[in-house]
Image 1 (cartoon, rainbow, N blue to C red):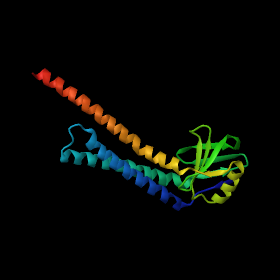
Image 2 (cartoon, rainbow, N blue to C red):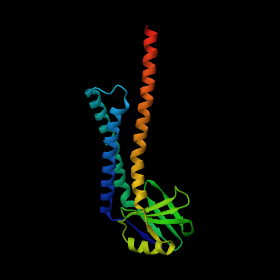
Image 3 (spheres, rainbow, N blue to C red):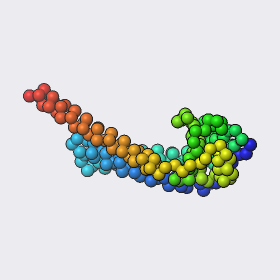
Length: 191
């Protein structure tokens, strides 16, 4: 049995990715506000919405970064001949037995992902793990470590942005149809 920790500077690439996705989400939300509302917004109203989104989104992002700073140093990976255990503060322990492993992937960012048949049960091993080559050697005896297909990575990024855009388009159509019906019924009742 051997236990491995992470390098403190290993958190930096993760924070950078979080920042890029956060900025993209901010752009999508702000663009959506102008698109979804049937009548649009006056510049002052759009300014208030932007301020609201930036303040509350920024607060949530700040809390996520603080949580990551707290939990990152506590990442511990314990390997035995027949199981792997990931422990990290604020998260439940995950133990995967050797015979549960369905596949082992290496992502484009360098993380190793140990997957099981249960899609909710997996372990992500960061590239900044101290002793990563030793862990790779042990895991390589279980199953071959395959590179995660780039097409799947790009598809997951694409879907992460496509789904909100589809929801925005649906919301716009729904609001436009219902706003027009509401305005017609209101004008009839006032006549």
